[in-house]
Image 1 (spheres, rainbow, N blue to C red):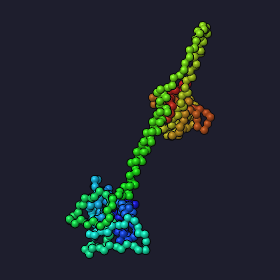
Image 2: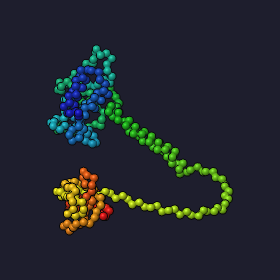
Image 3: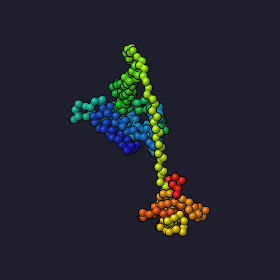
Length: 301
């Protein structure tokens, strides 16, 4: 879950209280803890607390600028005194005798501020002009990068190492497989005497042409669309009735013939009678819907 502005301010105040109580904390540890208090607002802007001024600052794409976070009237987290005590770089040798806390100025609350965060000096943008805080008297020291920046220094080097390793592997593979194909080694040859011997060719043998077997046509399957339909012994409506088909019954047409003409059509089809070993004729007309096969491939009787 991302950190909120309230949680970041509360943790920063806890760090200030630890420093004020004289707990052993080095400059590098303090900078690393402060760098973890970064908050990203709903617009994607990154905010951090400046440990030297105790105010919020955001990154505008080029540098860190002091400002008030969204929903707050002030950018100040903790009021900073004019005189700031410097942190010790190493913890004290005897934990029983902690160093005395610095005496705060009567015009500001008793808050001890750590050394400035090692970043590009932010441009201060405030609503009301204020006097810059006085630097804390401390021994001269060289600036060192923050812990988060030190951890990110090896990333470009690691990426460059991986790219160089891939290039070397590619060149090795090309040298092993591509070069032998482009420049094959010479093959030794020797002269061979060829003696031509006259040969008598046998007469050509005429092979019989294979008989082409016509493909087996697909079965013609149809579905009855009429309510009922009689199955006749002959292709006419006056012959004996052998059975009855109901609507949506599916049958397989076996053969076709010209029979009694009904409503302008005289096409009849031979089918197997359902639940029987006999065959009968049905009138096609508008009574069936072809589901598969071609009726023109059926034999005629």
